Image (cartoon, rainbow, N blue to C red; front, side, top):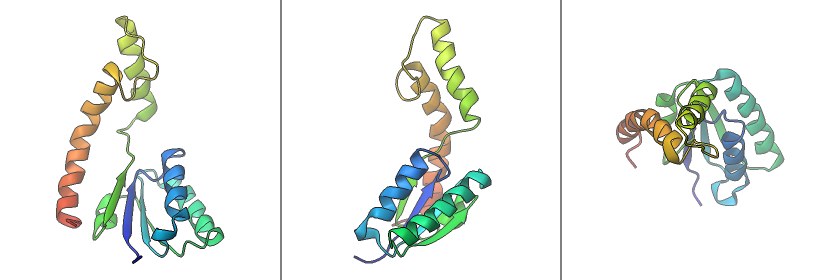
Amino acid sequence: MLPTHITVIGAGSAIFGLNTLCALMRSERLRGSHLALVDLNAEALELMARLAARLNQEWDAAMTVTTHTHHVGALDGAEFVILAIEVPPREKLWQMDYEIPLKYGVDQCIGDSLGPGGVFRGLRSIPVLMDLTREMQELCPN
C-alpha cells in the first residue's frame, strides 16, 4: 500500500487522540504514511507528539509525524482528515449542556451527543465544521 497523508484535528485529546493515534500506528496498511497532528493546545499536542514518536519506534510504523497548532498547514495535500474537536471551553460547556436541561426537568445521561445537550453541542460545532470543510475543499480536495 502506498503511504498516505492523514491529518488528525483535535489530536491532543487524551482519549480520542490517543485511541486514534494507536489505531493509525498499528495499521500495517498505513505503514510509512505522513501523520499530521493538529491541536490548539500546544502542551497537549507536544505530549501526543512524544507518544507518537515512541509508538512509531516501538511498533515500527515508519510514519513521518508532524505537529501543528493550526490546521491550515496540516491540511495541505491530506488524503484523509479525522476531526475530533470540541469548541472551547469544553468543561464549562459540557456542564452547561447537562445542567440547563436538568433545570427544566430533562435528565440526560451525559448530554453530549443526544437530547438537548447534543443539540447545544451541535449548534456550537456545526459552524466550525463547515469552516473546516470549506478549507478542506481548497487545501485537500481529494
